[in-house]
Amino acid sequence: MFVMTIILESIPLVIGSALIASLLCWLALICASRMHHQDWAACFVVVLLAILLLSGLTQNQLVRLSAIFGLFGALLLSILTRDRNEPSGMVRRRGE
Image 1 (cartoon, helix red, strand yellow):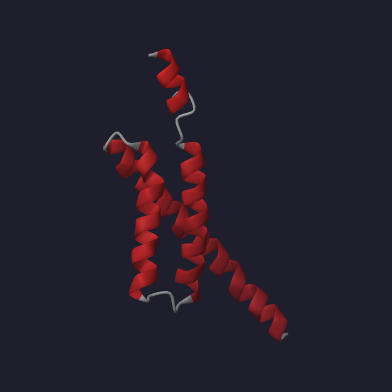
Image 2 (spheres, helix red, strand yellow):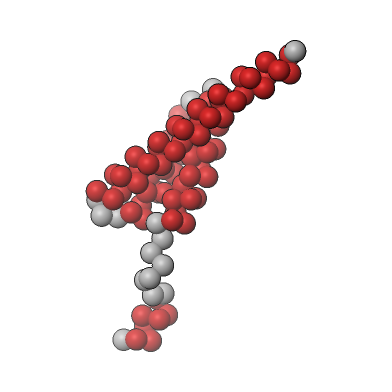
């Protein structure tokens, strides 16, 4: 019975922290797109999570798990907002 209560407590914890992290990434993407720099969205998330970790507020399990999901969200943002059509530095130098 004790295991069942742990499972029932962990399901809302995981779902809630995933929702918080996705909301944080979404807000960072909106702020970055309003500044016309969508590539900065992942940096915004990482900076906010660094401030959170350095402030010592990670004693709560929800905050700790949200920070972990936020790091995965920042990785996903950096992959999705990368401009794949932009040529690399070497290609630009050869074309000049």
